[in-house]
Length: 140
Image (cartoon, rainbow, N blue to C red; front, top):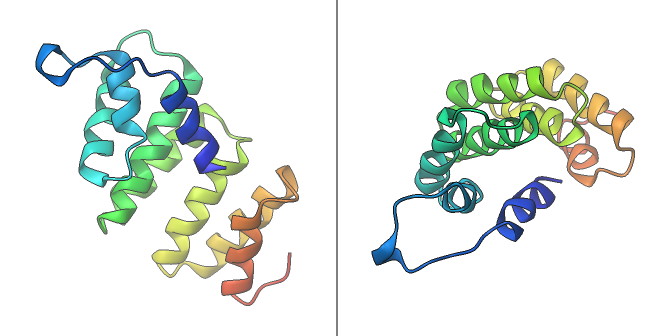
């Protein structure tokens, strides 16, 4: 599911030469989708700080920045961001699954299980959530 969110941003890109650029909205979206955490954090932060951004785009940016923080071991920052994304889109299975993975990493097993189960209620075929429950030895 995260990959779908990443590809949405990538599809919106119109890259110009690096030498001719002031960061644009499309560049920020591309950076936000980057597999490189520092670049993702910078791009997502630019989106979050943009005035008049859509709720969907803000949720996307907070969720991606949460993943980037998680990758850097900054799990509390990631948890803060994923909770912001959930305020914007409380029924988004991908965002709920992101929080479950952060809880799992923080060794908050019961919270992780609850979120994995919630994600599966919303998207019964979400393999990331099923796999998370298996890792934790829990049933769907």
